[in-house]
Image (cartoon, rainbow, N blue to C red; front, top):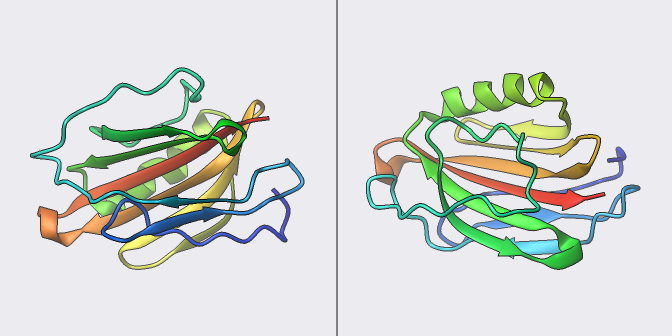
Length: 147
């Protein structure tokens, strides 16, 4: 994605919004309204959908709680993990390049982080947010668009 790409994300938290804007890779301008987050202890797991990059390094112990196929806008996957925010962030920062994904235009704050990413076949955005109301669980959102 180009340096002109702007996106703001707060993933999978009450009234959170994940935004991705158009780029040179023809990423559709979409806003994903997050659903109410459940803690990992109460989450009901869903499978990753076909069409989502199988090699995307989802954080350890992520329970997929929501999948939304938005056609050309991509597939939105939301989940929760009992893994601490700092460990999820570190895992994404090392796991993405190890699997051939490139992070771009990221931002990290004390309790949330997000970044655009690209691979040879996909582009998208991930966002994570600490969930203190869930004993330190971390919410995870990933948007993936086939190029």
